[in-house]
Amino acid sequence: MRRKFRVFRYKPGWSRHRYETYMVDLPDTATVLEALIHIRRDQAPDLTLRHSCLHGSCGTCGMRINGRERLACLTPVAELPDPITVEPLYNLGVVSDLVVDVPAFYEKFTLIERPLLRRSEAPAQGKPPEGIPAFTRLESCIECGLCLSACPVVATDPYYLGPATLAAAWRLVEEPRGKDPAAILALVDDPHGCWRCHLAMECSEVCPTGVHPARAIVSLRAALSAAPKTLSQEENPTHA
Amino acid sequence: MSRASDFHVLIIGGGATGAALAHDLALRGFRVTLVERGEVTSGTTGRHHGLLHSGARYAVRDPESARECIEENFILRRIAPDSFELNDGLFVAITEEDEAYLEPFLEGCETCGIPTQVLTREQALQMEPNLNPKVRVAVRVPDGTMDAMRLPLRFLATALSNGAVVRPFTEVVDLLRRNGTVYGARVRNHITGREEDLLADVVVNAAGPWAGRIAAMAGVDVPVRPSPGVLVAVEGRWTNMVINRLHPAGDGDIIVPQRGLSIIGTTSWVVEDPDHLDVPPDHVRRMFEKGAEMVPAVGHARLWAAWSAARPLVGSREASTGRELSRTFKCFDHASEGVEGFVTIVGGKATTARAMAETTADVVCRKVGVSAPCRTREVTLLPHTAYYDLLTTQGF
Ligand SMILES: Cc1cc2nc3c(=O)[nH]c(=O)nc-3n(C[C@H](O)[C@H](O)[C@H](O)COP(=O)(O)OP(=O)(O)OC[C@H]3O[C@@H](n4cnc5c(N)ncnc54)[C@H](O)[C@@H]3O)c2cc1C
Ligand code: SF4
Ligand code: SF4
Ligand code: FES
Image (tube, rainbow over all chains, first blue to last red; front, side, top):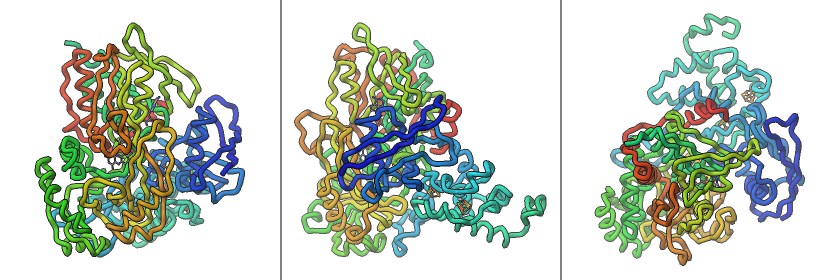
C-alpha cells in the first residue's frame, strides 16, 4: 500500500518546527515504526527517532500518531486514515524531530527506586520448581512516557510527580520488596503528588501495557486516607 | 609500560557488544567514545528474543557456544541483579522422536557444564499447566528472560560513570586512514547535521550485522552474514519458564515469557543488507503453529507484534539458512591484513556480550602495549535508569 505521512521535523537552532510529507510503499502489515524506518532509510537520513524492541517492551517509540499517544511499533498503518501525522510526545521537551528529552522522564520516575522485578501473577496455577521461591517477572511499566504526554496536569504543573511515577509508587506500596512503603506514601502525599491528579483517566487510556496509573493514584489516596496521619499531612493541613 | 589513560578507543555500534566493550575498556582506564547511528540498542540487540541462554540449545552441536553461554549466564546473574526473570527453562519432548534426543542432549549439557534436572510429565505440568498435555518428559535448565534493551543500558550506564562518552544519533560515514593505519572516523551527528572527525588510537568495529560495511571502509573483509529471524509476540503470559523443544535447534522452538507477553521464535535465513528486513507472513504463521505444539494456548492467543532482526553471524559466504553457522564470536585484529589501529568484534549472542568485550579489550591492550586486567566479572552494574541520568550530564 502507498501511504502519506506528515512528519514533525525540528532540529536545535530552528526557530520553529515544520511538517514534511513523505509517500511510502509498505506491506499491508506494516506498523508506523516500520514506515518511519523506511522513510529514514530511503528519503530522510537525518530523521531522528528512537526504537529498539519493535514489540512494545522497551518503551522508546512513543509518539503522537494522528493526535493520539501510541507506541509506533504497535500501531498498524492499515488502521489509520491518510495522511498519517506523526509528532513527538508532549510535556518532555523536543530534542530533535521525534526524539524527546528522555532524561526529563527519569528525573521524577527514579525518585521511587522501584525494582524492575515483581511477583508473577500468571499463569495462576503454576508451581515454581524447587529452589525458586516464587515466579517473578519484569514490571509492566515500560517507561514509555505516553501517560505523561496525555496528562493535562503534567502540562500545567511542572512539579507534578506525574502518572508514571505515581504508578511506580503504588507498585511499591502494593509489593514492597524489602522497601519501606511508608516512605513512599510520604513522598506522594504532597500537593504535587497524588492529590494533584484530576482523575480524568487520559493516562490509563493511552498506557500500552495496562499499568492503569489513574487506578494506582486512587489506591494511593485510599492508602493515605486509611493510614495514620503522616508528617507531611500535619505540616500541610490543606490537603489532609 | 604505557598507561591505558594515554589511549583513546572509538567504538562503532551501540548494541550489546559495543555497550559491554565500553564498560570493559572504561574500567581498565581507557578513554572511550562510543558512537551509534540511532538510539542505542536500535540495531539487532533491542529486537532479540530476550533469552538469557543457559547454552543448552547449543550443547549437542555447538559446544563452544554452549560453554560460553553457561559461563556468562552465571556471571550476569551476579553482576546484573534484578535484571532477569530467573524462572529457569524447560526442554520438552512432545513426540517419541523428541524423546530419543534426551540422551545426547543430557550428555551434551553435562560435557558443557550445564546443570540439568529431568522431570516427569506430571512434574512439568505442575510447574507449567499450559504445556501440551502430550509432553512425555522435560529437562529443567538455567534459562532466563532478559530485557533486551535494559541490560545493555546497564553496561552503558556503568561505562558513563567511569568516564566513557556515549553519542547516540552519530553515524560513522567513513574511517580516517593514513599509510594503512586507521586513526579515527568521520561521523555525522544527525541531531545537529554536522560532520566531524573523531581521532582514536584504536577503532573497534562493533557494528553487528553492519560490521561488513564498516570493515569495507577500511578496505578489509569480515565474514559476517546478516541472518534474520522472525519473532512473534502474543498477548498473555502463558508460562513463567522459558519453553524449548527438546530436539536439534529448529524453527519456532522457543517460547520466552516476558512481562505480560509470550514470545515465540524464531526462523533463520541469510540476507545481504541488514537494512532491508521483511517479516514473511508464512514465518509468522509457522511461529504460531510450532509454538502451539509446545504450549497449545499460544496458538489461539492474540497477535501482539511480529518483527525481524538480523543475527551478525560469523561464517563462510556460502551459508544459506544461517542455522549451520556457529553462534560463537570472533575478534579480528586487522593488523594481520596490513591495517593497523582497527579491530572487529562480531558474532556471539547478547548473553555472551561481556565475554566478547573481554576478548576484544585484551586485543586492544596488546595492540597499544598496556597491561590492565579485565574486571567486568566482579563489578556490579548500575541500574538501567542511571544511563539517562548520566547522559544528561553529557548534554544529550
Ligand atoms: C531473531 C534473533 C533472536 C535472538 N535471540 C537472542 C536471545 O534470545 N538471546 C541472546 O543472547 N541473543 C539473541 N540473539 C543474538 C543477539 O541479538 C545478537 O548477537 C546481539 O544483539 C548482537 O549485538 P551487537 O552489538 O553485536 O550488534 P547490534 O545490536 O546490531 O549493534 C550494532 C550497532 O551498530 C550500529 N551501526 C551500524 N552502522 C553504524 C555506523 N555506520 N555508525 C554508527 N553505528 C552504526 C547499529 O545501528 C547497531 O545498533 C538473537 C538474534 C536474532 C537475530
Ligand atoms: S488521571 Fe491524573 S495522572 Fe492520569 S492523566 Fe488524568 S490527571 Fe493525569
Ligand atoms: S505507566 Fe504506562 S504509559 Fe506510563 S510510562 Fe508506564 S507503560 Fe508508559
Ligand atoms: S520499539 Fe520498543 S516499544 Fe516500540
